[in-house]
Image 1 (cartoon, helix red, strand yellow):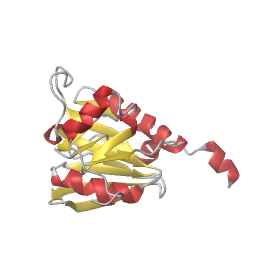
Image 2 (image 1 turned 120 degrees about the vertical axis):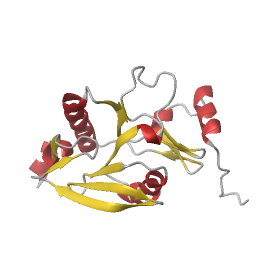
Image 3 (image 1 turned 90 degrees about the vertical axis):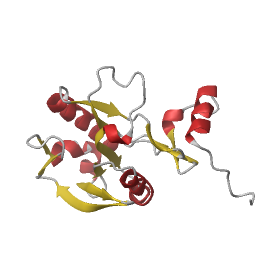
Image 4 (image 1 turned 135 degrees about the vertical axis):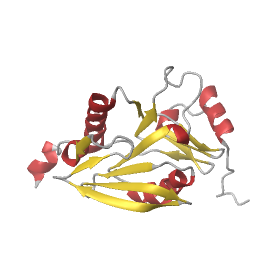
Length: 195
């Protein structure tokens, strides 16, 4: 092994590093295919979108599922990601006795204000491979929502794009509609003034 290569670690070792304090801020990293990867710090627009989505889902779906924010999801023995938002099957104990697994996920959302290629090329195949039924990538750079459904191997066979002015429904909760404008969140007033 060359000096530039790093040894891969598994989820058990990754969690041990977090528990011992070696990874001081475990919520700023995630384990992807055996590598500890820094998560990008959320920009202003991503923070707005995150709050907007949590508010929308909590208001409309609180009795139907658990809205989980930036908490780990075990994908396999070498990967544990921390997606921005997960809609989870309702659990009376709020997963106190076990971590949620991919089969518990109704919808997974990643919000991107940068590193969109990493989400699509690295994480999307992992999510498809563990059978996450529906993935939304909130693409703040292009102001659209990319919806991935029907996982097949390491990809999704159905891809839908939604832009401002449109509405979207989840597979699990048809009939509950969410405006793309609300999901993207309000535009940053400082960016609007600079145009």
